[in-house]
Length: 156
Picture 1 (cartoon, rainbow, N blue to C red):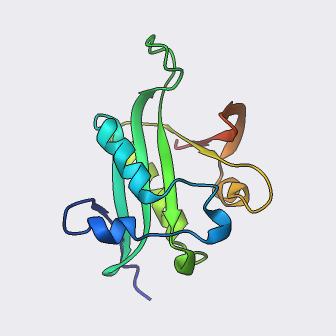
Picture 2: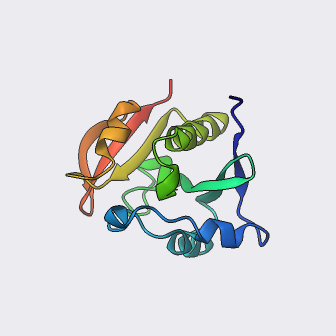
């Protein structure tokens, strides 16, 4: 089967498809809905990179990456990071490689921009995505962001 997955910028033409992406009911507490992410992207246009994940013409997920944020938020620039902010794969599309594709696409974009380390966060515990991220090679840093585990993936 040919890989027909791709990312598309969110536009007026695909906005409804993007906000229609829904994770499973048991996952809703783990990730914000797409419409929330798009509102955050609007508030942070210099760092947010929202994209619709398509398989052919079928919307299967949403991701939002971030580039060059002041992780500590203290204005010093001592800890600038880039990575995956949100990942929502439609409940009916999970387990088919779309999430892996999305993370690899963010990694490729980060490499294109000269980055060597991809940061993300996840909710730990039963039913959470930790196994997914660890399986992709992320390693926990020992930090938390709110109640979420911070993980990093070396891109070199």
